[in-house]
Image (cartoon, rainbow, N blue to C red):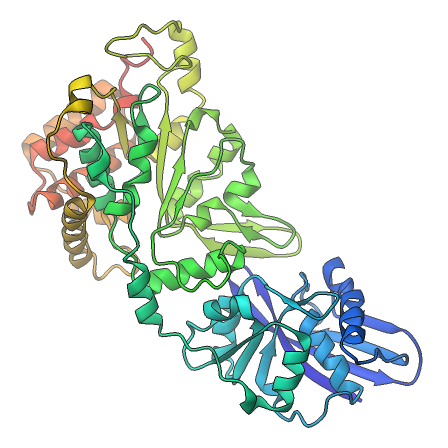
Length: 513
């Protein structure tokens, strides 16, 4: 008897519906075809054990299982459940299930029939709704994640027996309900680290406010213990809140990567990813036989923080150059090429030299100038060109640490950032996905970043004295535009350009003697 069930395979951040055909005829042996990988082939042992453990039997005749379309590679263990259901239906062990073709079924089976969670529940649910399936049957720990998709019945089950009972009597269970907007609004109320906790460092707070307002990349250069990491971790608290569409897109990426906790719904906070400096090129950019998103995609719509930047592998840092410009990355392999979004703010930190005390106001640096220059050269010029703000961090003084002066909270800074982003959004409303100054292309810079004569002369002198590249020139104009937006100025004034120029510390020849 031939029976069809439906599953789904995740490729990139999209899902493709897979038709699982089970045919039981005279003969012997079980055949699993349709380009399965080893994890799918091993499913037959799990499926047989789960079937027998729950009072059913495994057919001893010829069983052919086809995963169509057969030219697409199938991977992972999530096909266990639809294969088991197909075998039980084809062998007449479960009957009267006319709605079998109305559901996508996914789940990994334990040997006793328990259903384990899967990756990519959200893109699977989106594809199920788009292809007009009635519902989605999946592990209970993935149900809340999938239930944020409207107009789709989502059933979270824990055991093979529960799936069989539901298919025979669908009215016995109610789908998981989730009000997406209510969940999103409620989750945004969770507390975040606040800039009110930071003592002193007003110059650094100003730089991070500019970075947040314009979506600019920044690097913090200073001695150990000066607060670089602490301030970087508070950056998401002053960024504009995620929109619902951004939250859905971010959640989809984390779902595919298996980074969502059990019973999770939407990611409502901007991601803050801080990989260790031993990370590989593939883990940072993404990859694998069937490409998976890397850290730069997991930081999409959020912040990627690289602490101790010179300690990262040179090759790992260089793979970010193209994504920083294009805000997406394409991973090409022999079997597949997939594109992942990578629109993130890069915030990096580093010591100014190996000992960490170069240019320190009180402590002496023991590093010779060539050693300092060698340390700085670990970060390539092309990568530094793509970082808009170079911010020097100095240690906090004792009076600042012990003073009782009031400090500005993140909420007040965020309001200015949101007001600035609104100005930018209105200016760039006719330019598609471009919504902040850092994303402007050359033509937009020429149209919207026009300094007056005094500002142009100031910029010309800076270009000549600092030997800035054309990309650095463009970055200064973008940062100047952001500073003007924060000030509520329609025009870019000389003081805006002057402030932007001072954030090019690593371009100055005074560094490293």
